[in-house]
Length: 256
Image (cartoon, rainbow, N blue to C red; front, side, top):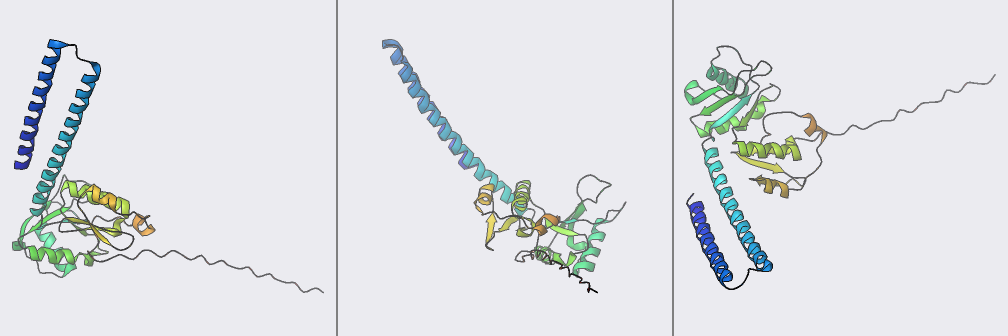
């Protein structure tokens, strides 16, 4: 914030100086001769260039500030996980529901006392259950749950990180471009696996545009999940079917 204030002050002083110079030149011209069109055009071009440079500088400063705020907000969400696909019942004890799921499916001993906050997100809907926000006291136990989430496969329940809006939009764009199986998050950072198997830490759409894109596989288009693959685990690509041509045998009829 201090750097932005400094930039604004510098630009304000620069504008004031330049405007004073323009006004001084105009006063000299009005006292001696008429101002030429070419002179005005040159002054306008100079001033326009100055404005564009100033706006670019401000845009860069705002971008730095936005990323800093996003990083700060994501740090506050490190102990939070989202559970999707958990059946919703009326007057349920959400913390009890989550502890039972963790114990039964992940084989981890989670007690209600280890949960700092637990509740459904958003307004109730009839067509699908709302996700559950789970905030834990212990970061290490949060990581145990996160790295055990593959055990939920086939249960209809998935776990994802509680991303900020900016990172969520970036993550969804990455999945749309490169496929579900090649994108995941770890500690709030978006990871993309390119066609050569190289991992890329993506923090902006500029980083995303630099990664070489490959066509989506049939498994990417078919798989619709709300969680992310386990970091470091590459899901196998569906093998194409091999068509086997059936040959017809000719039946010969013996001549009499």
